[in-house]
Amino acid sequence: MPRPPIDLARKIKDILLHTEPLPDEAKSPILHYGRTGTNIWNALNYVDKALGSPGLYRGVGDRHLQQLYGMALVNLVEGFERFLKEMAAECVECLADLVADDRLDVFQIKGGSLAYHFRAGTLGKSLCESSTWLDIQEINKRFRDLLSDPFKDGTFWLFPRKGQEPTDQRWRFDPLSIAFQLRNAAVHNVGVITHSDAGKLRLLAKESVQGQRLLTPTNQDLTYLKRFLDETARVCNERVGKRLAELLTLIHAESPALLAPGVLANRVSTAFQMVLNVAGIAGVVA
Image (tube, rainbow, N blue to C red; front, side):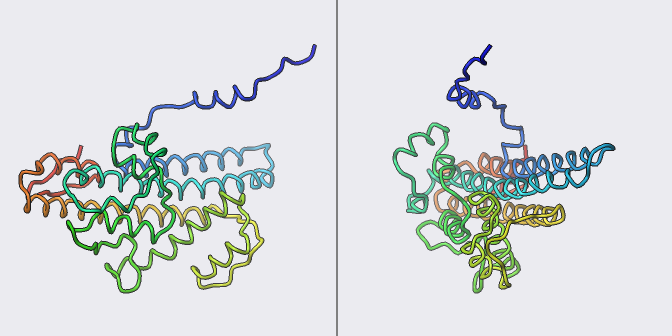
C-alpha cells in the first residue's frame, strides 16, 4: 500500500501550536535572561554527559556536540539581545506618558509592523520588539535618547567608548561587538566566517582573522562567552535601573502631579530586581 500523502503545509502550520507559557522569570528582563542562559547551559551539560555513556563513540559524540556548541553560541547572544529589548521596553513603559519631547523618535517602526506589535498590549513592546539590537552604536543611541533628561541631549552611554563615561566600562564595547558579529556568521552563513566577516572581526579584535573558515567554538569558548554576557547583563541592568529611577525622580521634582513615586518605585524595583528609589521612596522587589 502506498503511504498516504502528507500535507506539509499543514504540518508547518502545526508547529505554531507547539508552545508553552512564558516562565515566571519573564516579569523581569534580567531574570528572563538568566533563566534562558541556565537552560542552555544545563542542556549542553546533559548532552555532554549522555554522550560519555559506555557504548557510545566519543569521537562521533564530539562531532555532534560541535554542532550544538554553534547553536548554543547563537542562543546565548540572542538571549542577551532579548534582554536589551525587554529592558528598553520597560523604560518606554515608565516614561512614555511623562515626557513630551522626541526621545521615542529613536525607535523607527512602520505602520504595518506597529499594527501587529501593538497587539502585545504595551507601547514598549510595540516599539522595541520589532527592531534588531545587534549594533552597539545603535543600541547606545537608543538608550542615550531614551534616558536623557527632558528636552536635553543624552549623556548616558550603555557601552561607552573613548571619551565617554564610565571609563571602567569602555572595554566591553569591542568584545560585545565581536560576539554580535560571530552570531551573524553563525546565523546567516551557518558558521562560515566569510571574507567580509573576517574583515570586520579583524578591525574589532585588532588581530589577524582568516576568512572562509568554519567557526568551531569549544565548550571553554562558550563558558567564557556566557560569563562575559552574564556580567555585562548585570552591569547594564544596574546602570539602566538606577538611571531610570534617577530620571523619574527628576520628572517628579519638576511636575509632582505627573506620577505616583511609590507605584513607579515598586515597578522599576521589580523589573530590575533591585531596590530603587523614586523621589525618596524605596521600591519593593516582587
